[in-house]
Image 1 (cartoon, one colour):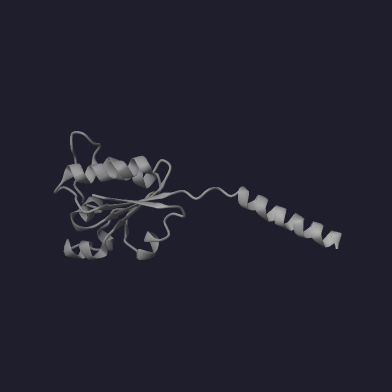
Image 2 (image 1 turned 30 degrees about the vertical axis):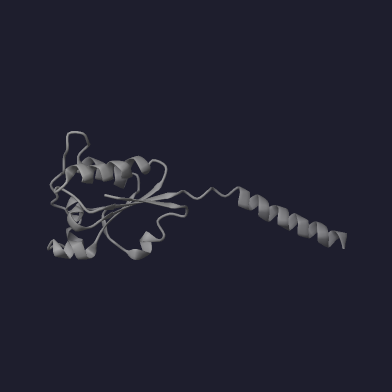
Length: 142
């Protein structure tokens, strides 16, 4: 009887120690951006926040309406005196492994498709919305 009890306690202790050594889940930041060249301040503020958060958080940037133009192969960089350009910020985000997705319907409205996206950007996928992070999710809307 003692042997079984000791074996059970040993197994429980091993399982509890194993769960203590797991890395804590990273929190995520979901940034919704609907503006581009039509509102440089808003567009670049969103990308700046995403870049800052990507240092220690999982980041997903969802682009719709006018913002889809920011990630096209032939995109003109958006600039504002107080910020880095859209090109520079998007490069930093891609380098940090942030997920950047464009709305497929908004691409279609713009007369574009998935093949018009610059490398590294992807068409939005609802499954990714729910799986890009394992921790809590903070949502910012620009």
